[in-house]
Image (cartoon, rainbow, N blue to C red; front, side):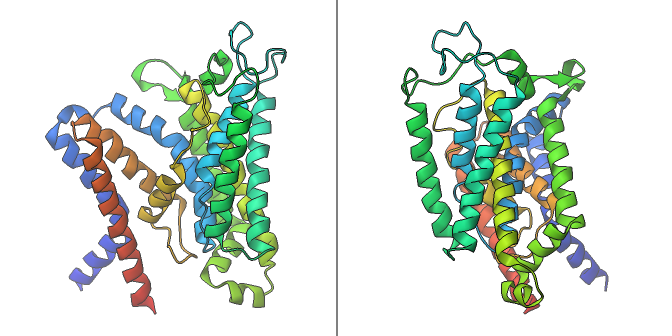
Length: 335
């Protein structure tokens, strides 16, 4: 009986155990890894990634996938950055654009993300195109649109810099001072996580999302308007990608059309490692947050102790395969 309880505990909390083992292992190798500054850096690096992962999780839980997330992040980063440069910057994207209220470009970028999410939802829900193919197509198209926008006169594909201080403060500013300060970008990420948790657990949208992912045909029979909810879910995911793009531009102090490249794969991996089922219908916000933290700890921690990037990729790949294998084993045992 005790062995069975232990097995159940390990199964239900595997993601948190892995995270703890990673932190302890790196700390044993280099004790200086444990510190407020390290934690702060990990949280800052995780902030935009967790917002992207939450958007991807909406799609995965319905049984779909979204390959366009990273390119939406890149497009919205470029859009917001292009409208929030200081007046004296010599290569302004829009030389004659007045200094706008910061919220206007941010909202424009989020709406652009929402619109492309809506397009994904329409293609998947209305035209019955498999999500993998639909979002693969929009991924390529969005990158083309972003590159055309980025290449317009007078910018001509030059990295966008000279961003306003009030905007970059979103990514680099904090409440308080010193190592115990709380970065604004982390606060925003926490608020977004809470909102998504409420949506997953306390709203009709969340209930129907899990139902669609569990069994789409049964959801239809039970009276759920699957088409409507898929469009809403893809649209909301797009808005989250838009917000992440804005914060990524603010965090790095610039943008190019290559921003967001491969971010969707990291987000999908974090979701899967965090317990979001590859077959749909299962996933939690705390699990997704832990999945993002695991990959951030891998990237940051292994770099911290001097492990090369190629070995990091091998370790990340092994973790992803193990997580999917574990997920499929659980799924098979329930059948």
